[in-house]
Amino acid sequence: MWPEHLPLTARFGVIEFDGGDEESLVESIALVNEFKARGLDMLNVSIGCSTIEGKTPWAEGFMAPYAGRLRQETGLPVATAWCIDGPEVANAAVEKGELDLVMIARAHLADPHYPYVAAQALGDKKPAWVLPAPYAHWLSRYRGIGKAAAQ
Ligand SMILES: Cc1cc2nc3c(=O)[nH]c(=O)nc-3n(C[C@H](O)[C@H](O)[C@H](O)COP(=O)(O)O)c2cc1C
View 1 (cartoon, rainbow, N blue to C red):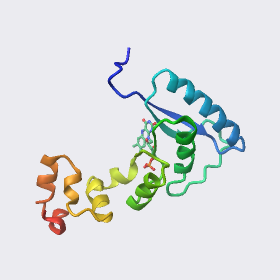
View 2: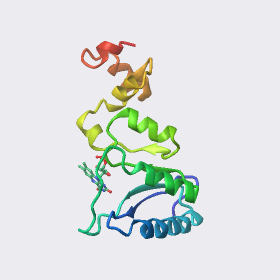
View 3: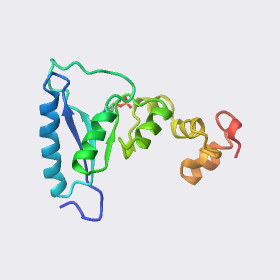
């Protein structure tokens, strides 16, 4: 049994982009509400990818509006991944109320300093310090990426 004091999350494919999108979304919302009633704390909103008929509209942040709808109609906090590369896009999705949590996969794999670079791009005065203290301490003294920050 999952302990009540720990957050329970799940990842659902809520849409296929196969022409039956509204039906998929409505069914997903009903299912998510069932999960919510049984203790789900956060939903990771994803694509079904279960049909070759799907024509996914790949673009930066394209899943955020769908996540926003799930958030609005279920009242659950939501996250999504899928092509959120730039910090501004990530930040805008949170500010618009579409996402509670932004999941960065490939962009973070491509740059292990992604949190630092994102904080810097968004104007944080001490960007290294969005990371845990031991990492921030050494990153801010790293002669590569830390040189500009040095704080
Ligand atoms: C190397 C790699 C492994 C992944 N493995 C999984 C996985 O096991 N389960 C899953 O649901 N998604 C997996 N994904 C998909 C990611 O969770 C994510 O949804 C996807 O990469 C889109 O986000 P991005 O555009 O930020 O990369 C994987 C992605 C990558 C690049």
